[in-house]
Amino acid sequence: MTTHKYFKDSFATLIHGDAFEYLDTIADGTVDMVVTDPPYFLSHNGISNHAGKMVSVNKGDWDSAKASDAEAFYDRFIVAVDRILKPDGTLWIFGTMHNIYTIGYLLQKHHFKLLNNVTWQKSNPVPNLSCRMFTHSTETILWAKREKGKQQFNYHQMKALNGDRQMKDVWTTASVSKSEKRFGKHPTQKPLSVLMRILQSSSTAEMTVVDPFVGTGTTLVAAKRLGVKAIGVDSNSDYLEIARQRLVDFENEKIGKIK
Ligand SMILES: C[S@@+](CC[C@H](N)C(=O)[O-])C[C@H]1O[C@@H](n2cnc3c(N)ncnc32)[C@H](O)[C@@H]1O
Image (tube, rainbow, N blue to C red):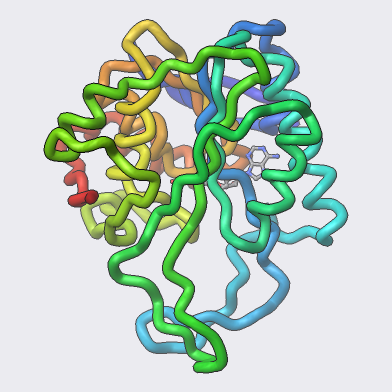
């Protein structure tokens, strides 16, 4: 699959193609920040709940793989990020309990230092259909830096946003709203409020952010709202078209409340 530019404006660039092929084109040590939500590899014909109905957990072909393939995929990704990040650059990476421990282990294997284990707590989680375990209501976002790097952290801005108290690593917000899905849906779209907080906390207007698995472009919409340049890659052109429309109409998207 060859990569090519799908859309570009003064802040956002969308690339259609394979993330690894694109990452290979980036020079060593040149990226300020990678923010991404990679495939979970959870699509194994299981059952979940949507609006009270049993539905398949399958998200698409891009999300199906054997566990061993998933580990190799994340390993390859972390090696690529390690190569392109600036010495003080950081990586924000999303995951659920199914993949985040593998990702955390691999980050440490490749000598990244974990800065935070942020918990996104969903205020409106999907009820558990089986009634044999607790309702799943969180996702994790790891923030990692190079071993000797000095990360950008907008401490005072975060404190001010939190009523002049240090901000904690548990963030509560609802799942993606209708406004965020007005151009179409993605099975694992992330709330704009969460991406806004990530970028507000650790980016500056001088930085460029890369999201190699950008989906519907949430990272780029957040970056554009904050005046930060960002590049997003996805192998699925339907998702990129939603991302393009969101980027054109970026000022009209409602940002959910986040605590
Ligand atoms: C978990 S989703 C990201 C959703 C995104 N956070 C959002 O808010 O819309 C992962 C994305 O990675 C894409 N993807 C999977 N494998 C890829 C690859 N090798 N190269 C580029 N994109 C890929 C999928 O098409 C999917 O949109």
